[in-house]
Length: 343
Image 1 (cartoon, rainbow, N blue to C red):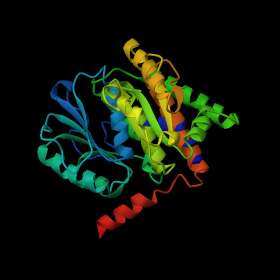
Image 2: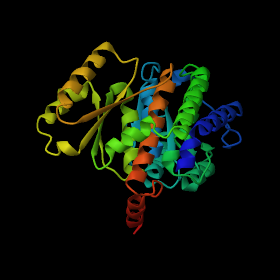
Image 3: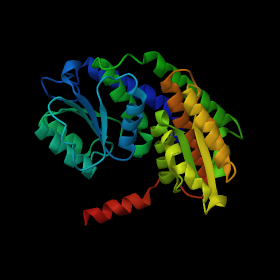
Image 4: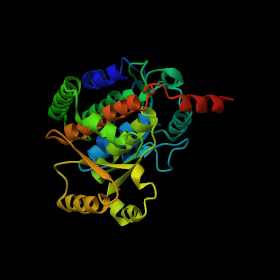
């Protein structure tokens, strides 16, 4: 897992290259469909990403990242069924890292019937076999790693393709800055005995982590929650401002396990002034009950700031796994559940 985390900046480079090469060839190395590539942007009414777990969180991140730019709605589907609005005017990314996710395979068949414009992303399995058989555009990504460590492929390939479609602006400079920021963070983490991620992991040890951030970074907090579960084998919670101020903040009056909480705020220098004030007041309320930590995003572009928080969070989950004396890579409970489902 350590090596996979360190390889993440390089993975972004590979993902960008895959996305750029695929469109330049109009997907011809990866599909046999004659009318591959994108339709005119005016023919899409919505974009849908369908996947589960590590394949779906990238879609949440894309949705948050593009929220203030893209002019058609993005919907993230985590289910056996597609929403009724999906049609021939939908651009539908179907993502399953293994290619064998049962929910995603079920959605694939529905998407064909609805005649949505399909793009499949997977490392192999039944999904790629079906796409190849049906002459559906597909993108094969490197195999042999846990889905949660394939985030760069699941995020940056669709990002590049959305730009090539004319739906969003070019992100070349922002991607370049993101890689530089992550390389810098990697040097800090590997070169310093004490670092930000390690500090937070010690705070989380034997505690129930609570993660708060602004709505703009909701997917980042969810990613950290997922990483704590899969890597650290630790339960946690995540909530977002301003919504948290309308309900959950009251719950801090009687947190019966208050001695076992550790609260982390994910912050950003571009926060709206009202959100910044809400953070400050929320912290005043919570600090009477438990310890509070903050991590601030790094970089100038929204893309760099988003992935700086993700990268630090991934290392938090890694260090906490070591403190919990568990191997971060296996997910035995998920493997057991899948085995039982097959019976």
